[in-house]
Image 1 (spheres, rainbow, N blue to C red):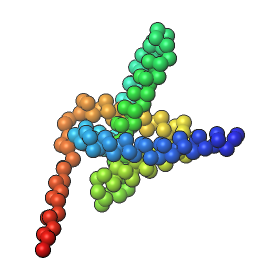
Image 2: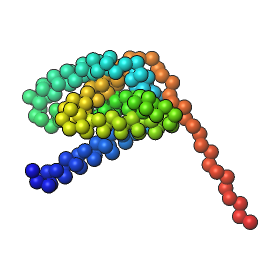
Image 3: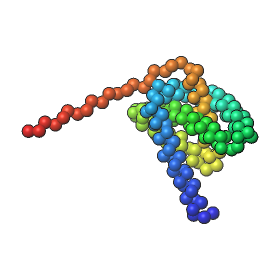
Image 4: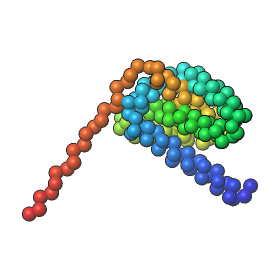
Amino acid sequence: MLMSDVMIWVAIASGFVVGMPALWMLSRGLWPEGFSRRLAVSQTGVGKSLLVGLLPVIIASLIIAIIGKRLGPVPGILVSGTLIVWGFMGSAGLASLIGERLWPKGEAWQQTRNGGLVLICCALVPVIGWFVILPLIGVIGMGVNVRSWFGSKATPAPVIEVQPPPMPVNS
């Protein structure tokens, strides 16, 4: 294995460590109501979300196979990429749940960030993290998304209004 091969995998791992928590923070900032629903669903049980998440995986696999035979590989790649990002967006609630349990006195955004880093660092564990934990995170995220559609409406996270400091007076 050449040094360039090693550096490719280091770059991929670094991208996951930075990109996934950033994706979850983006989800928290842009869609606070949906994020609150995902967090509420994550608190009710991860096992249920795993089982429900298998349904979109099976349906998408069939769709990708059908599209791949008729239109070639590009549409299948687009569908699978969209599904993967959608699944990881759903796991933002799981990241926040981990952050809440490990850092109960921290601010909400810090809990999401820290929980996300814990989750992603677990996914970076060789072999088990790559082939078991990372796919499970995506499947659980898909289940969280599906369950959040059919669950009760959660109240959005409170928005704290920050007042700007008073203007300085020139004397």
